[in-house]
Image 1 (cartoon, each protein chain N blue to C red):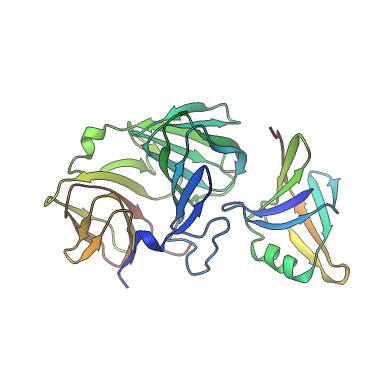
Image 2: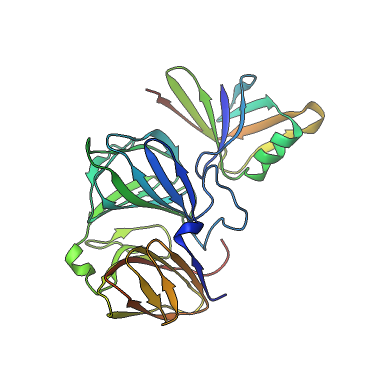
Amino acid sequence: MLMIRHSIGSRLLCQTNIYDIEKKDDLWQISLPIDEETASKVLEFQDELNIFDAKEKEKTWYYSSDAQVKLQPNENKLVILADHKTVYPVK
Amino acid sequence: MLIQVYPAGSRYTVKNEWLESNLSFSFGEYYDTSNIRFGPLRVFNDDTVQAGRGFGIHPHREAEIVSIVLKGQLKHEDNLGNSGIINYGNIQRISAGTGVLHSEFNASNDEEVQFLQLWFSPNEKQLTPSYEDISYDVEQLENNLLPVISHTSSEGVAGIHQDLTLYLSKLDGKKTLNFQQEAGRRIYVFTIEGEISINGDTVLKSQDAARITDIHEITIQGNQNSFFLLIDLPGGEF
């Protein structure tokens, strides 16, 4: 499951099971289908987003330090280019 | 308004079976566009955590995080290799910078822990994460503004990546203290317990706060024996 949260207090902005994470050189491209209302909420906080790929026993934390978050409106797709990744266990 | 008072009751409260959190600024589910920050001060949470409970491992970035324990014991662990328990008389500062993972738990199995957690915007982005905890001499709080966090660290004063100084003080009833800062800066005052007056006519009861701009010299009087916090903050846009 992918969750996009605000970094100040971890408010959940978006959650989905349909997403793709692809390594691109030193970055990770995270893409997901998104509706207009949710996209607007995510883009409002684009400088302060934490993205979590949650598995049963671990979470992977991504963020984009320079707010590389783009909406592709024709495809209803959100694309985040993350430059930070940390994996940690979940008890 | 030069001195804007925020009564304790105006704070947003999050309460569940293990946590009561009183939020002075937008945080988590509480989001108010008119109450995001006061200068670099972005978060001021007054948290009480039940015995043995706490916040599991979670990340932070781009924040200077200060924890001030008022009662009980707070256990901290992080992925930088730091772990320990802080009590009343200790201050913890985490510079989250490019990213830190940590957990915070009540270290006691029979007593609650109450602590203030403050987040400030750092004066520089992409800092290397770091951690510090210090002990201060609680006897020096008596009728004195004791610096415990500052841009320049020293013995008993934790260093922070922002142009600010945080003072704690215990003021006896009827005693006064004066505070002066450079023009253009801001002052934040929070009454931890008791009741104080600022410049004679602004009263702060227990857990009330004041956000002060354009006044750079204030007199604080204890209306009763009081414990309060004062932060000397930079001016300008954040």
